[in-house]
Image 1 (tube, one colour):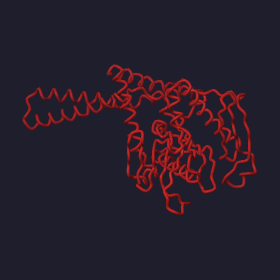
Image 2 (tube, rainbow, N blue to C red):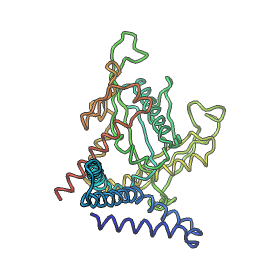
Image 3 (cartoon, rainbow, N blue to C red):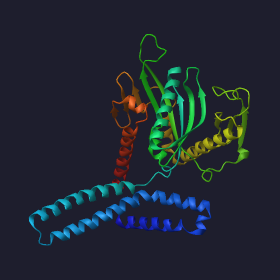
Image 4 (cartoon, rainbow, N blue to C red):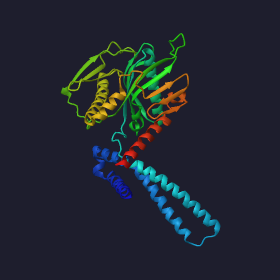
Length: 357
């Protein structure tokens, strides 16, 4: 492990020097490539340097014990060695996790699609609640949110909403949110006070760069139409909305939130690129693709990854058997407890498979 860590540190230093090379500075594409590669190595290099510092301090402290020390100093050095050994073990565990095979999409921005499932208007209102939850979480992380497309309902919810979250590690934090989310509560429109169960599906796609998915414009059918829903005088009067169909695969993307047809086209192409990348990756992965399709599902209330129970004020993630009793805070974007637990479980599974291998 130490040999590999040393190689990674040397690579990190090499990239750092490369980034101040005038030839690289004058080549934006090469500079971007170097900066991304360096950023991917930064976490492991920072921890490795801390680890080397602890090893050095541990060696010095052990050397001190060989000298003649007064009892008080001897106790202090022994306590320091104990503390340093604990730090060493913790850093070794952290490095082991950092060296696990990384998802190549982890550093990317994320495109999220939320669709109302079973439950009619209540499902659409819940889809709006989920959208607010994710945008507030993004704000807390210092990330930027951009709405790509919306399909409103008369009661203020969303039949469907597509949006992008831009920020470092956005996909790595949000990739486990994909699946069916279920809500149990008394709808505002329910006069008898009965608890209803509704569902919404969340799909999480890493943003695909142009170099990753090459779209032949001859393979596209582009239709324009009048936008619908709230939005002022341009709605229903100007053909600014865009629908793009990728003919070879049948994938369809619509965008209508911008007043400019050109801007809607740019957004639609960005979503299309990400959907195609996911489709191609799924086809390459075979069985894993089928599992993901099952996870996203049809939006039926019986397929669920998480339940938001309003009467009991709890949120339950059924994949890891985690229940938290702070529903209000979760809906305000406080998702770290759930996301951290999902990431920890994923890392534990990877460690288990690495040990078996």
